[in-house]
Amino acid sequence: MRAILDASVLVSAVLSKTGAPARLVEFWLAGAFELVVSEALLSEVERALEYPKVRERIEPADASELVRLVREIAHVIPDPEAPPPVRSPDERDDYLVALAAAEDVRLVTGDAHLLGLGDRLPILTPRAFLDQLEA
Image (cartoon, rainbow, N blue to C red; front, side, top):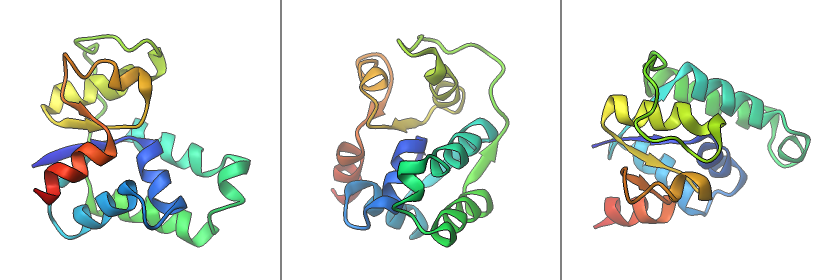
């Protein structure tokens, strides 16, 4: 099984060690699914980790470790050149839709704009994906 965890899910995994995002990272590290990322997604994670509100709550070493793990262990693919099959209401998320479609994988997000596309694409909340993995 393969999936994309968007930047907010990855950052949330470091912010709260007990939530669904943290459990998803544990499942990924245990080999329960293959994490698919692109350079654009990695850049978004790095930017999000630099937000002042996030930096107040995450130790720099933990932020660096997350990025290192994702770069070293996840399946890093080129950013898709083709447009997404469905546009997100927030065009900044179109690259995630295009990535998920190009790789034919689930997109895991807490973003309401993306979740609204769930009737047309395999887009799940972290909890819903965790429930699938635990079943």
